[in-house]
Each structure stands twice: as structure tokens, then as C-alpha cells.
Image 1 (tube, rainbow, N blue to C red):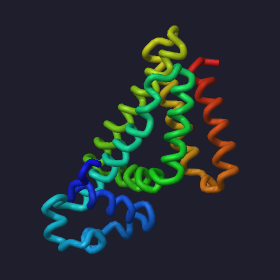
Image 2 (cartoon, one colour):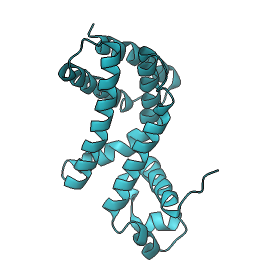
Image 3 (tube, helix red, strand yellow):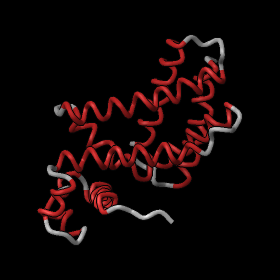
Length: 187
């Protein structure tokens, strides 16, 4: 079993605060208390709130990538379906509470905007690769446009009211799977 570093523990606590209590409760002193440490010790790892916010969003992103990595050997259409199901589940149940406040802050914060740009570039590349595997005739430009559309659908679905209702979520995921496959094939 891998050891968790103190920085990873802090990020997990901070992500939990952001997810359950929101951005207005994402306060360094409160996070230090919840992590059972002094504020100065927290600031040793993350000197500013923005440092910690960026660490949280990058951690969530790495967890997203790890969650979909197991689909790498599947057939292209099954791989895309797994990506859709995995990301929709994660973004609806958890990451929407993390990514959305960061996206709002990124409107006026160049550093967070850069972090989100890097994250979305990776998602778009991953989805573009899936498009080109499913539709080899798609040019890189078309594959990229389709990837943007697919990630937009997943983003939007993860923010809808009612997404925590299992019946709605399951039907939504089934529809998203069909829609993304249709987009990937260009039909």
C-alpha cells in the first residue's frame, strides 16, 4: 500500500471542504484545523489559498485520468463509453463541486485559468484520440471540434439539477454514451 504524503492528505481535506461546504468555506485556517495542523504548517505546503485551490483541481484531474486509464486496451467505442460513464459519474457526484468554483475563479485569475486550460487540453486530446480511433477519416481539426462538443456535453450534464437522483443519472449516462458515440462517428 502506497504511503500518502502530508501534502496529499491536506489536498484531500481541502477537496472535501470544497465539495461539501463550497468555496466560501474554503478558508486556510479552517482547512488547517480540519487537517489537524497549525496554519503556518499548512502554509509550508501551500503558501496561499490559490496554491491549495490549484493543487485540489490538479489532484482531481489526476484522479479522473487514473479512473479512465483502465479502458486503454478496450475497443474504441467501448473505450469512449467507459470514458463517458467514468467522467459523468465523477463529475456529477464529486468533481462538479470542485471544478465549477475553480472555473468561476478562473474567469478573473490567470493562474487558475492556465491550470484549467492545461486540464481541458488533456481532456480534448484524449477525446480527439477517441474520435480518430472511431472515425479514422476525421481530420485532426474535425476530431478536435467533436472533442470540444463531447466534453461540453459531459460538463453540462454534470451540473444539472437532479443529477444525484440515480434514475435520472443512469438514463442521462445512457443518453450521453449514445450522443458521444454519434458525435465521434460524425452521424
